[in-house]
Length: 343
View 1 (cartoon, rainbow, N blue to C red):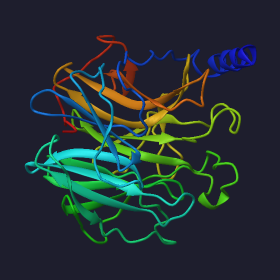
View 2: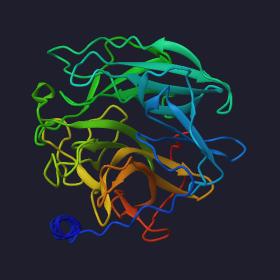
View 3: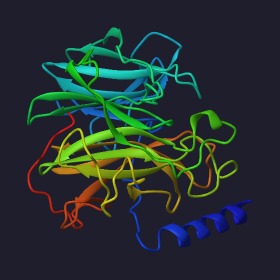
């Protein structure tokens, strides 16, 4: 079995990483297991990491490398609550999360708030997002709050499968502005989950918007999040994509100029490599401690894909045309100011 895995990994490396070599995740110590990480940093410098789990979990560390504490529940429930997103707006921390019914469009997004990351969160219930329909065929999961300082506007990015990633404007962190939809990304080239054809052949999810040097970057996860090479071919697993725009609402295009809604656009910036399998569930932030933009995500071990996912992060550099790439510290970074911070 070890020989078989080694041959598979060698084939994958020949197919996908000869043209681009990605660095391995930075070291992580302590309790690093997590799925769908959402990262924040308090005023005293403590990092908080939220993840999908019953009740949503949170753990803390003095640095991105850890040591990460044992997880604690945010909400006192055994219900599976997923894909958290955390952001500081108007003096409060706002935590978004989802309740999901797999392979249906009956999921929904809730929001909670707290005056500090160390205080209890007050649940405000469901956002008033209308259900998907034939005109806007989406699923209400994978929330991402984006604040655009240009117009001081709030946007909620969301969506998974069907017609993928959409956006709504908010009047405040818990109030949706009706009929303010934008369609950000649509992928009809990837296969769907095995045996789950109701979702259609378009697995894109986990949108995360980030502003840098006047451009708006849309990161998302493409492919199958939760299958192994036993059930999906290599290349169909999670990978991290990016498109960009001159406006928060799009249209977004990839590095080759393809529209990310109408032309299957998307530039991969991180995929399976070495012993890293299916990186995804990502976020991006400017880190004051590191003085750099970072990409964070979860990933699986290629040689043991049955193990729980773990927290990973890397530095992001920027090429001469302003496109991000995963890099080692100080390698090729061309940052020009802080841009927009996640928190």
